[in-house]
Image (cartoon, rainbow, N blue to C red):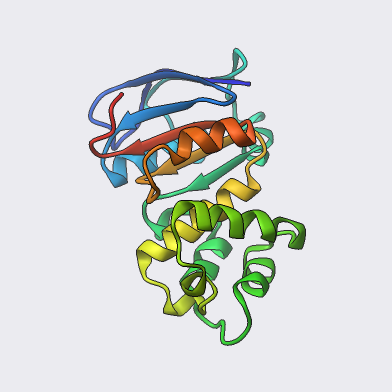
Length: 194
């Protein structure tokens, strides 16, 4: 699978972005959190493009193909308030969740298949999350810890493409994970080399 952005412009981006990333690879884009989240939402058709083309294996993203494209894509934003699914946003805030383990919470609140929980826990550990902290109630986690958990969940859910903004993970993690899980990854952040 190959994702291409050709002179993609969004409202929040200061200049157009072009990139090409294939399975097992990582493409880095330098942008702040708001512009990065805006770009990632535009890639999956949830924000309008101001210009340019997003294509997958040479086929342009259209309003008809966007839902199909989103099913194979996982998204880990820089701010919890921009997740494409408001149920995920509510779940990650931990509001209204009083009891249970992280496993129960991910299955019940995020709709994650129980079979993926081992993968979430493995990725959380590789990201550097303290597993004792990860098993805390969601409301007890800091915003950074919630973002790390969201990244672990996104990695577990991704089937072909992972979009991540301002990732909180060790250097080299995204490249190793892309190769290990055979994903194409677009990572947006400040100070990221293009």
